[in-house]
Image (cartoon, rainbow, N blue to C red; front, side, top):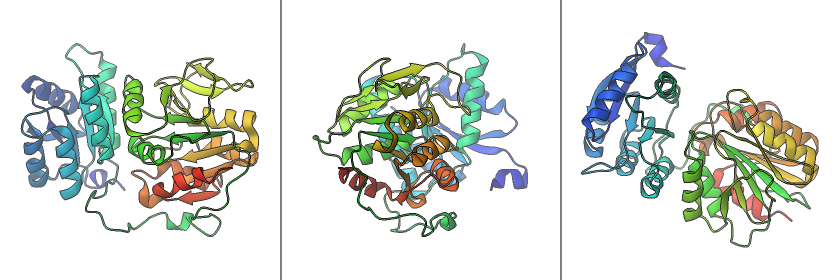
Length: 356
């Protein structure tokens, strides 16, 4: 429930950036919306942590490279001491900076956005405003010193209709499809990083990410896991033991010859790439020789596609609520009765390694 709406007050934002001009521009953009109120500005990560404690903002925007304390360190400390939704905002696609950005996401930040410029088109400003509003709704949890258990609000979904431990896997599996969104990069690193270098099935991934950051995600994952990671290429072969990420702003599907197909078809329910498209074609092409996995994420993308997979006998898995940053996508698939197993994040690699 949105408490801001109950008391009819704006969303309270803390801006963090070491550039005075960037702070002023972000403040002007965000305060152009009557629903947002910038209650503080920090010039480095250390000040951001202090102001987060003093002001208790609804959401924090965080730069990456800053003096005294960088954005990753600040994110980690905020998520440990006073958990708040955090959006990383960066102006650079330099590998060092993007690697630090994804480390911050792994530490609990929700998403990464490109830093706007003064002459950016109005839709860039509108997108920033919409993302701040949307992410302010996420109920974040304490990281690092977190307790062993977490109360769930969707426990009714996890009934005896679903397996919550790793059963014998389906036989003859030829491909694995994964869908993820908010919190996804860290979840992907956890699952894929636990797989051995000789893991023999191809893994196709749809991760919702801001346009321009797809290649950075591939680079970061390649530094985190043993399996090779690449962006999908139109007409590319699907090779065993390879992780293929859908390029940002392209749908990724599979044709009857088991090759990657990329398209600019209209966004599906507001998303491109869409996991529904990928999962639906995996159901059609691979049938019961596929595995579908839905991880943490906002919205419902992938649920209908996973149902198509389940209906042809494919193995279907959803991440459980306790280990999700946002339970929206897994919950949507569970509500459609498209899910065979509901597993903690750290158990999903065991399910994949049991594939025969």
